[in-house]
Length: 115
Length: 148
Image 1 (cartoon, chains in turn blue, brown):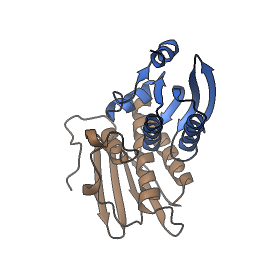
Image 2: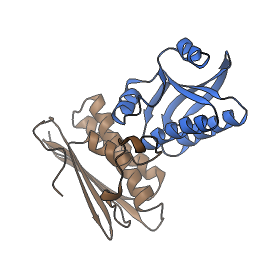
Image 3: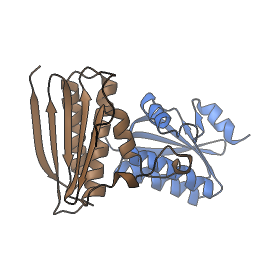
Image 4: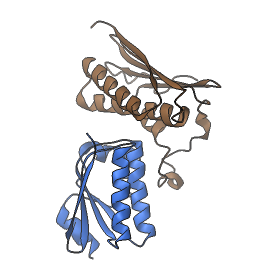
């Protein structure tokens, strides 16, 4: 299954709802273009909702890292929301869980941007 | 459980990567691995196939990737060969080192080693052979890394 992406605004935060697989090829490209598009529009508070992302490969991990650093370099902030167990475990073994700001609750995630 | 072997040669494309992943998923499930182990095996095979197609053969249409999946009573053995320049394992940086954590690539071999029981990488001037073994009934006494 390819990846789908949709965005919504809540209290000045752009929530990106992703579903499917973030893998080499289409999924990684969709994520990259979505984040770059948001940043170019000045939407720099980005919360990636990964609740329906059931699979990420090393390219997808790289794309998440790229999105994180791209946002940061442009004065923005990118956080992760609702990791599945598979994605959570993957970020743990690659030691990225502590690099990303991971939230388990959408309201808390939004609040974290507006401290 | 009877032995089962599948081997084939494919082009250096993303379709090949997906094909290898699907075969790994099917054979791992048939070997009796649970869902989590099936996911790990299929991801290891996907990463190895990506290495072969992207880094080994560099999407060269004249170069092929060969896959062999063998299921025995003890093991699931997967061998993937590319026709690239030969992977220099010593040049792959540690993806867990603090200075490498924010790199956008370089985690494939690490994930393969994390998910499989035995991993052997045999580079040569005519390509790289990657052998991956997952024991059907995990034996913690088995080594993680085959001798080079």
